[in-house]
Amino acid sequence: MHSDNKLWPESHDLTKESLAEGVMLLRAFCREDAPLIYSAVQKVDSVSPFRQMIVPSGHTMSVAMTNTGTFGWTTDRQGYRYTTVDPATGQPWLQMPEILFSLARRAAEAAHFPHFVPNSCLINRYSTRARLSLHQDKNEEDYTQPIVSVSLGLPATFLLGTLRRSETPRRIRIEHGDVLVWGGPARLIFHGVAPIAAGTHPLTGAFRINLTFRHVAEPH
Ligand SMILES: O=C(O)CCC(=O)C(=O)O
Ligand SMILES: [Mn+2]
View 1 (cartoon, rainbow, N blue to C red):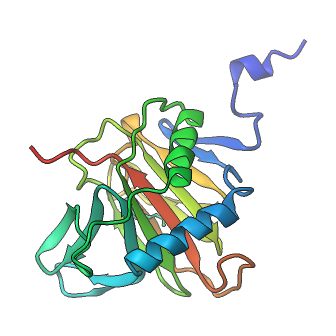
View 2 (view 1 turned 60 degrees about the horizontal axis):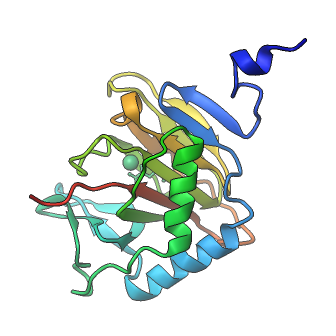
């Protein structure tokens, strides 16, 4: 009798890969819904267009960003923060489309985080050579909820670090439709994205799109 599946419930499941304690890769989790998710991204872009933001050092990010949800992540020379209004338009960020909210909740649940309530979705658009250097997601001021990271379009090499910046990150290939979830003991891991290789994807063309869902603490 095979007891493997009981001992290692997820190691034989090709679609669910535990990468570290609190880090789960859900391969192809949203591949079928990708066209609908991408339509939602285009709707967000029509309200709050993708823009390349400036970091406090004065550099312009290679990744273009927008947001949907109550809170949107932004940066300028003054620093990183969450806002309820898009600084570029002076209008609130688009309310999070139901398809995105429910996707994030289902993914978190599949990764054993059953109580995720995302109120922020940062959307990253990578063109060729765009990259994201090693960082922690820590502007949320609430680390009890996980991060759900949905990827569409061109593939990427995700840099999966640990809680220490000095440790060399693992290189994980992330493809269209993959969802990566990290939380609990892994909530503050360092991570990043290596430069995107040139290519064309049937859905997103010359881009990689990443949606990062988070729960941001309400201001008090
Ligand atoms: O694009 C990705 O896969 C990661 C994005 C990310 O880490 C972020 O937006 O903070
Ligand atoms: Mn991040």
